Image 1 (cartoon, rainbow, N blue to C red):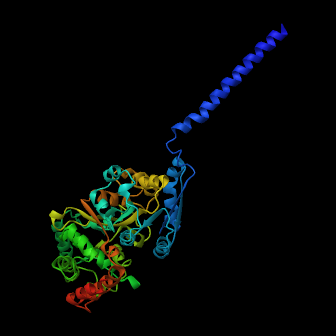
Image 2 (cartoon, rainbow, N blue to C red):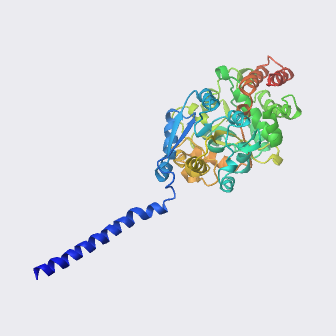
Image 3 (cartoon, rainbow, N blue to C red):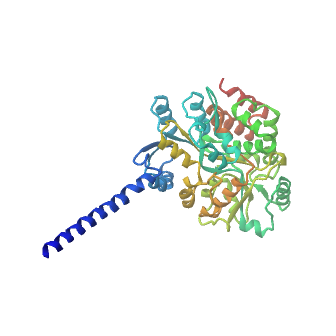
Length: 439
């Protein structure tokens, strides 16, 4: 009897072990067959860019969830000498898989040499195109030796078409935020009639003095002529000494050179630091009321000022309704230099709002993606800047950053400063800029 019981027990034990073994095999093997990232887990994608210090930390945090989900290790290397180091890597035939360019003009140089992969051929472009307004796609399209290609996709961006003001004093004075150019002109005249200067302006910036003036000219180019003319201008196909550019500059100087319009007058603009200029808005009473600058300028505001309480901003209105609501922007464009499945997957991810969601929530990044959510923004300034960009009918990158360095960061800055200071006439300044354009 004992033998029978032992035999039966043995059979049951063996059967249960077989069953458990089968179940264990099912648990381990079945998910592998369904894993959409099985082919890329454990792979490495190298990436270079200008993000260092705190920006590098925020970028790493923004890609962590994607790395965890896919098993792809994005190895990012940031450099403060990015332009020089990336040129050596690319020209030497050893580029990273992906490069983040803060200046599209630098990327365009490598596109013209045939060194950049056409994203039209490697990404799901229907998804990419559905997630950006057309202007972002236009700015990512560049000329290669074989014709135009989609050279890059946009990640983190910044808005520049913003006018800042002392909200507490502004509201107390009974002033109204202008929504049209005519309303802005009316506000300027009201402030003048009240005995104050409407604008706080300064373009001094050490060796980079003049860049703040070029931003104003770019804003007016977008508001007084077509996008086609703006694009021709930054390529050197539309001269500085042209009716279109002269009209844009006049729109700036009609404000800057009018008596009483700028605190300190025309003579003070070139010697006032761009970072110090807005501080007069916070004096009691304010010595000026309006300041046009990108969203980074809040770091120069007095300590302990609070967005939405002590200061606020509005969109710089359109001048001519036929040109819609243009926004001048800066930002980062990602380009692909090596084609592998894992690199394609990372680039496709960068074309989604999810790629910057963590950075947006941490502060300091604006998403250009349609699928991003305004609820992600942790502070009022970033959220409102995102709204301005989302509501834009067109966007264009900072023009001086797109021009050759000898012009954009050279003669354009220098000659506009000379004109504002009165040491050169407009004719002399425009002729000098055109003459500096590389052959």
